[in-house]
Length: 258
Picture 1 (cartoon, rainbow, N blue to C red):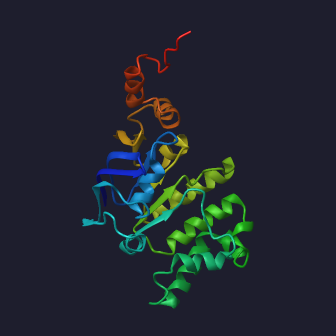
Picture 2 (picture 1 turned 30 degrees about the vertical axis):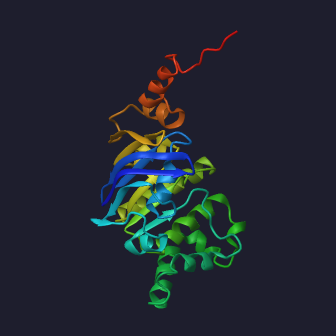
Picture 3 (picture 1 turned 135 degrees about the vertical axis):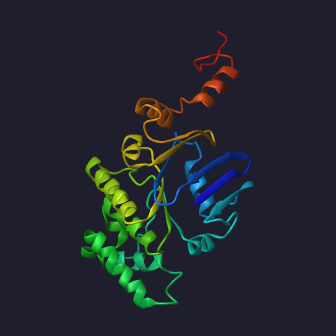
């Protein structure tokens, strides 16, 4: 469904992605794990058209979308739930949902209203808060709103960047239940997540990203959860070990004169 080949992206002289290769299969949940600073959010933003790649290619449903504008990406069928939710705080719940359908408003407002009703069926808590400003919602409610807003674009592929970030454990469980339900209803999901334990419970396939490159691709169970967590949280993968050895010490410490 989504094919990423040799993608490199940078912020100024800092290269965040260094030749990323991965694929997302239609109908499943694909998870991208990795330590902070590995380039996970940059990859999401590059796919979404917010960051332009320096080299490489991205194809979606066999069509090249490399460097396409964000609005074009949405029209192709990809929607992003960004890190930290980023709802419009001074707009109410209903207005946020309408904003998610902005590319469709000129075609059929009736269908947009139907989609809002459908979203409220899935997220009844949002219906109770229709006129409430998004900035006054709880963190969990804001995350639900961010997901609902993305669904208003009727995506074929829903990308979610750290949906559990900063949420209480019970809310995290609810968010992952929503992820599973969305997938069961036919939505393909590409998930970036720091909560490796929860992510591996729902994922069909996962990738490890370390220092801007994919270092592992497989199904949950191919690595022990302990090893996945070591690498996802702490970056203790082969690349880090090789970098430490290149600095002259096998455990990653540096020699200091005394």
